[in-house]
Length: 270
Image (tube, rainbow, N blue to C red; front, side):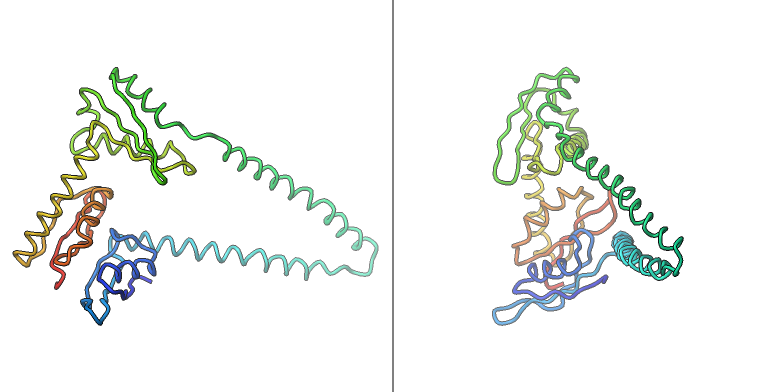
């Protein structure tokens, strides 16, 4: 499935319903508004996997089909072996199946047991503590920093403050995003998701992007023409989408391929 019509009380709800059916993210689709929602009618949209993202979803579909095919294959192989293993009325053929039945479970059980032990060992390997890693990282750089952490139900917030952190943050936050990605990977899957802030960059960047989104919406609403923003990473594009999701005048979509993917803001009537 590369396209799906979504219906909802609002355009955003219709888009969410279509994305759920496609099992796709908003950054990977093109959106066409078929019908505006109203007091007594639902909104309707057509959501299509973009040409740039389509190979990725086709690959996932092919992998799932191959897995399903492989799951069925052992059953047919087993049936054919059982059909061929019909014992003949001789003493020799009667003894051979007994030996195979006795030995094969033991041989097959060994790799399964080893695999289970390896998996259990992997689960017991502790993830790298983010604070300890950051302390060692900035100590290696010779930077004197303060690291504070707070937690809520979903996230673990880590704030790093100190002097001369501009080069760590990097141009347009390249260093910050790279370090944030590294910390998230080392944190492990079973822990709370980490939200890292260095020198207040995360909060300042979020405020700057939210203000950019509002200015862009006002400009699009006045001119009636769409506006293409500069390329952004996924987290930055998400701030634009979230800021304008409740704006009745405009809507947004992402186009292009990484790392040059960008957001378009356009009037809802279009």
